[in-house]
Image (tube, rainbow, N blue to C red):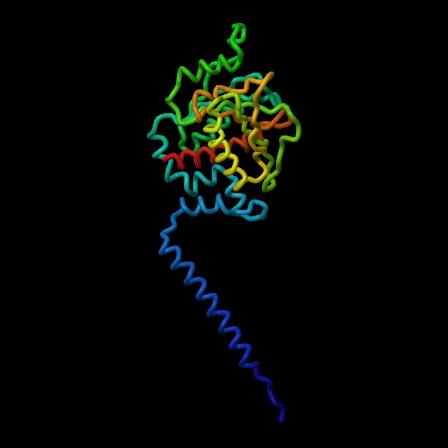
Length: 272
C-alpha cells in the first residue's frame, strides 16, 4: 500500500512563528502611534528630517512637491497662524539686473519665492522699487538697498536679498528634478557677523539634512574690492542668498524657491 507523505510539523511551526512576529510588530506600531499621538504635521517633520532622498520612493517624490505638501499634510495646520500675523519676509534685489540664460532675472526669482512662501501662508513683501532706477545717484547699489531696508526696519522677521551667482556648475538633480544650487553670502566686515552666521549655518544644515548638495555653503567675503557688509550690520536677520547662476532657467529656479520656502517655514516655526 502506497504511503502518502505528510507535511513536516516543523514547517507549520516555522510559519506560525513568522505570523506571530508579524502580528506583534503590527500591534507594536499601532500602540506606539497611539501612545505618541503622532499627527500629520509631526509625521511630515519626521519625514523631512530623516528621509534619504536618494531612494526612488513615491513618498519622496511627494515630499519634493510643495503643492502636495500644502494640500495633504503639515502646512495646512500652521497656515492660519502665519496669515494672521504681520508680513514675515521682506524680499529685495540689490543687483536687480542679474539675469539667467533664458532671460529671466533675479526679480523673477524673488517673485517665484514670494509666491511659494505665500502658498505656505507666510506673508511676504517684495520690494517694488528697483535699485537700478537710482543708480544715477552717487550711491552704491548696497547704499540704495540699505535705504529700502531702513524704511521698513523692524517690520519683518527676515530681510532676504536675492542674487544670482556668476560661476558655472550651478545645477543639481535631486529625485529626478533639476534645481539651481543655493549659496549663502556672509560679509565679514560687519563687526557682528557671527550673529548672521548662526542663522546661515542653521539654514545650510537644514538643506544638507533634507536636500543634500543643494546648498553650496556659506561664502565669507571681506577686504578690498568687495562690499564686505551687504547691509548685514542692520541685523542678524538680513541675509543674502544667491539662487543658481547664469546657466539656470525659470523651472530650476522655481524648484529651488520651493525648497527655500520650506526652509523659511522651518526657520519661522523654530522661532515661535
